[in-house]
Structure formats: structure tokens, C-alpha cells
Length: 344
Image (cartoon, rainbow, N blue to C red; front, side, top):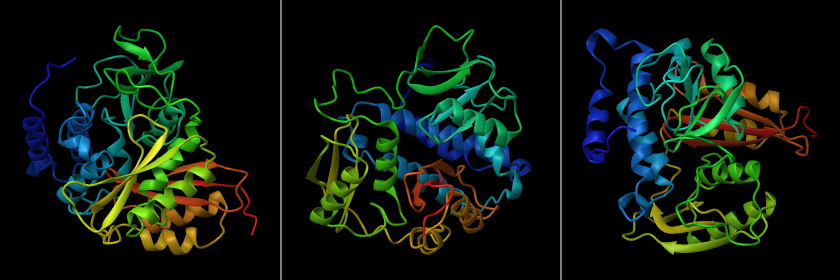
């Protein structure tokens, strides 16, 4: 593992490196590679001891990544990359899922023909790597296995994995040292993942309006009930110092509860105009669409010239209509859960 250095210095170097050289200003891979560098530093910072400044805003780690990258890239449109958007998935930064068709040091941020990846799409990292392979036109991994490699989620060939690679038996990052999930807490990978997406959602979820502590807790409780997460609790805490009139909600490192941080942010409805919040709200959340119909709306709403992670569309035949979550973290990403045929 690379020698540990000062994270603040690393972050400043990563931010500085995002500005492309003049000759590479329009090269989509170059820009994507720099984004991955910053994401790696931010991911490392987020994994440091929870006693630091990062620990006071667990959900903010993803938002900070998104805020920095979107701002430095001109709100996501300054370096429009047209149909070359898939080039952003080539580097496979060590935040999300990194896919390697042959084993090497995936921490090295270089363009390689045998590496790709990006944000996590589902609870199945192998399926996610197959999706990124198809998006980049690269080969799928032969006999793939998902592992944790120095804390990162990596999918590579089953044979030849490095000694430091540990089989990834669960979908989420390991719990903090010494932590244990409280007794009686229901674990469900799909439900827990959707819970986190819903809490950060800008369309009609936890980040779509200005909640106070009481209404935010009621929303979180309703989501736990909807998703069948029995035994989970809610806890209200105060943001010190106050950062605004609105609350935000998150799942801490140890699952089993949702924390509602009162006075943790300003009104989240003040969003970047480039985000398709209104279109997704009026055309999906307020309608009753099939999964395929919702995917088409997302394609039209986002367009081809704005960077975004691939849309995650998961079949839920128990649903009458498709649900939509829009989350910003490194870039914008849409999550859909719905049936093949809407029951209007």
C-alpha cells in the first residue's frame, strides 16, 4: 500500500491537477482521470478516524466530492464531453467499484486497457463491472471475484489475486473496528442501499426540501417502514455549529439507525440549474411509469453532454410504478426501482 501522506496536501495537489493542460483540455479521459484522483483522496479522507472534522458530517463526504468536482468542472458542463461520456469510466477510481481484467496495482491512476469502473450501481459488484465493461467497450472479467483491496472494492479474476485482497462477503464496507450491528436489526442489502439513496435524494426524498428535526425524523421512520427494515431506530442530534435551518439525514457507519442532524444545512432546494430535478419530479415521481419508460425520461432529462454516472435501473415487480432517486456525489446519479409494466 502506498505510504500514507498528509491528506490535506494530497487533496490540494489533486484539486490543482484537475485543471487540464492546454493540449489536453478537450480530452475526456484526461479529465476523468483527474476526477478519479480527487475521488481517491476524498475516499481516503473519509476512511480516516471518525474523530476528525470529516466525522462531524458523514453524509457530506459524498456531497463535498460532488460539490468540488462539479464546481471545478464548471457545474458539470464546462468540459462537455458529448458521446465520450463513457471515457469517465475508464480509470476506475478507488471510490466505488474498480474492475480489472488482469491484476495490477489499481491505485495507480493511469490509463490502462485492463481497468475500468465507477460509482456503485447495484448491490452486485460483478454485475456492475459487466455494465462498465459494456459501456467502455472493454472485455468482461473472466471468472470474476469481488474483493476488498486496502479497503477498496475491486473485481478481478479469481486466479492471481494479490495477497492483500480479502473476499468481499458483504456489499458494504467493513464495519469500524470493534463495531457490531445491534441485535434485532434487519439486514437487507437492497433495502439498505435504497434507504441511503432515498435519504440523499433531491427529487422527493431526504434532500428535496427543508426538513426540521421532527419532520425529518418522521420521513426517515416512514422510509424504514416502507423498506421493511425492522429493528432500525432514528436519532436526532444537533449540528454544532449550526449550518442552516434545515436538517439532513444519513445512515452512520454502523447500520441500524438513521441519524437526523438538525440545523445541518441550508435549504437543499437551492440546487445547480444543470441538475434535472424538476424534470424527474414531474415526469417520473408524479407519474406512474414502467422501468423502461422512466429510463427513457432520464436519458432525455440528462442529455449526452453532461457528466453523470450510469443510471441504475433495478426491476421491482412488487411496485406499481417506478421510484426515482437523484443523488449527487462525485457527479449526478439516478437510481430507478420499478416494474416492467406499470399498473396505473
